[in-house]
Length: 228
Image 1 (tube, rainbow, N blue to C red):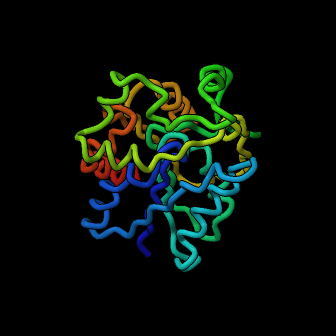
Image 2 (image 1 turned 135 degrees about the horizontal axis):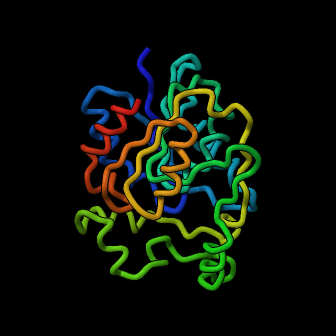
């Protein structure tokens, strides 16, 4: 049975970041779903159960024996273990795309001390600006291929509570009992790529900015498929 590809976006952005890759996967005859995690961050912490529940709802109508391939971008990488544990389906592979990695065991902080030190002054009444509003225009502009793509991604971004970044995400034992791989676009995720290689995962480099899957969805799709 062919696997279903589940493209998981970072809660800091939205499902539009996977739209181009999803279109190309579908055009190539692959089944694909893009769950929305835009509701993650609402309510009280912890927020990781909401991420796992959102993915579970997205594939609730998929037969339990159909294998899935989890593809996580950026911060969504931290939720792969809890998503894996919440699903009844077999997971054939997990691909981390310019993504944060779960700890080898124990809980994984969503943000380290340096990032939290940067974020806390940005919060107003405990709520952060949109992710693209954290950075200077010189840093943001190169991430987008064109104005329409930028508009679609920027407009759907949520404003997450600071407490989202202060949470720790559990790492259920045995979550990585299947092939895992890593796609590196570039800094600052080089350390994660080295760690993935140290874990024995396949690692590939597709040079680009952090949202490169929106700039070159064809090459990103091809690379993901080659790793799987």
